[in-house]
Image (tube, rainbow, N blue to C red; front, side, top):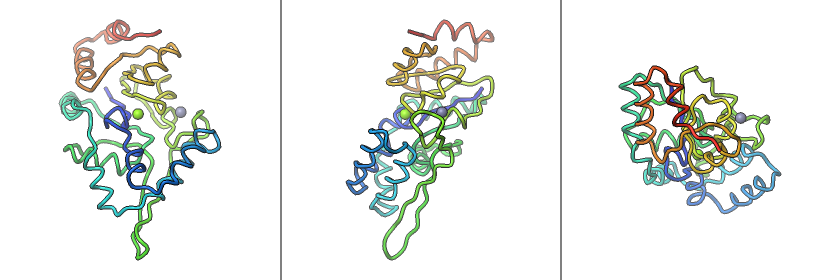
Length: 227
Ligand SMILES: [Mg+2]
Ligand SMILES: [Zn+2]
């Protein structure tokens, strides 16, 4: 079995990229956000324009990332998965370095992370950040930096955990979807079967039940909800 998990709003309590931009970027980042909301630029273009607006040293950036909270059940969930040979891949339209830093702060290392890639260079002018979006796609409607439906090669036996817009496209192809917030509303609207959850403690209880149940599909259809 393999777990695919969104990051912002699913593992991280708040949207880490938004928090970084909000606190460390020059205010111009709002203009790109508005251009994206108006459909003038894609989400990938928006993020590639916003990340260089971060005006902070790597130390200041890390200090902010150190304050980011994660779901209270996620550390246990990682241990649970490891002891049950369930692989975990994080698929996020956020920033790889932010994700690995936040997880490491909570003692979690070694998870596969598929996300936008940030790099930086330090010179006498200061620190310049740059974002690459190797997983961007023009195919999916929001023009996301990470188009999850294209890059996630899901083995047959898997589940997906998400909460928002970046999970919409992949929810159509995931075999078991755990959904909350906007993703829950989307699944209802699209008649995609999903299992509602509030946090990873609940996901873990359900997955433990599925592991005990050789006729997994039966219990899933019992748990899953559609509109
Ligand atoms: Mg999310
Ligand atoms: Zn997609």
